[in-house]
Length: 448
Image 1 (cartoon, rainbow, N blue to C red):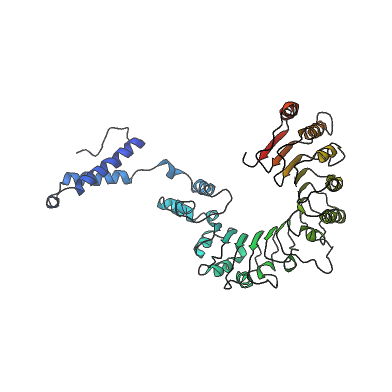
Image 2 (image 1 turned 135 degrees about the vertical axis):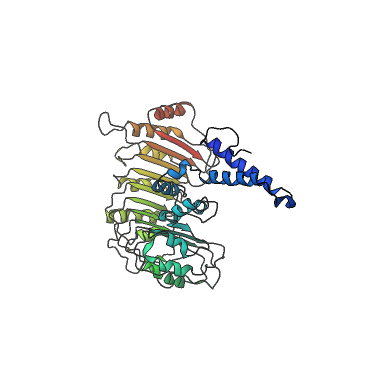
């Protein structure tokens, strides 16, 4: 019996596969021999097996010649796009440790693979593998099911200097056995490297009486998002490096003496419920992006007062108007924002005739590049496109100098229903010419 197997060019992948197949065939034949015959076993089979085993063991593969640095980078590219790793044996990075000894060594030596994880029941070993890279943590608890893994808080505290991002969503905590004050105090600190923190704590069985310990010393925090559960007066939002602040459904009590002095150079602010109460006591001269909800005409007065007091040059504004309001009030806001480049208005009626007519005056938001109208609630399936088309034509003709690209470059119209009527006739023709001229135009509806 020859050890060469089927004829193939020596060294080719087909030849290597043939040797592996031949070896498997010999091993299978050997295992099926009668037990009594094994004592005399055919030495030629055993000799062929040893020779083939030596040949197969000597095979080298092209992938094994790739430098470690390149393989390591390829491994990093296998992580989820959002960087949040949920430990799972069939997914990166754990699957990369199961291929061969060399890949396991490379994977365990690549700290970037282990710097982020969506926590379940892992030990400190995961953090240790990160080799001092900044760490990222996502921890979610919902529907009252909250049981910390053994050693969890000790692990967080042990790596306090390395935490860069934390997302803690602790929701529907109906059990009195959980205490947010104790939880955040035992996390450890100070978290000197933490730059992003998203904290959701709602439906607590008790009130929080003081600022959670983990929020007391965050010198590098740039992005802070707070959802539910904590009173803003109990949270020191004056973090020295803060740039982006989001407050959703917060419980806010207006201070007896509003603090009108400047906060850190916050550049973007997202406010939902109680947003007007927040704007009433802050001054943000560096603010460029604002997402704001309007529930009454008083909210507009608060917004105008804030803009005047802060003297901020807003470039991006989203207004969610939750009441039927005369367009005049919206125009008041736009008239004091000459630097605005991106405007999104979410309203009961997406882009009213009056609003479109007023936006034809180019002294209102003259630098507008992107415009979006969205319908908050189900409205009439009919929509008056003529004022909208005329406004877009006027905005597209606006140029800062001969030969310069028009300012308005994109428009988005969103309906709350999929039954909204699409443009037709002359309106459709005019919109088609605007699109041909370079305007990015999109109509969106639920179900479309």
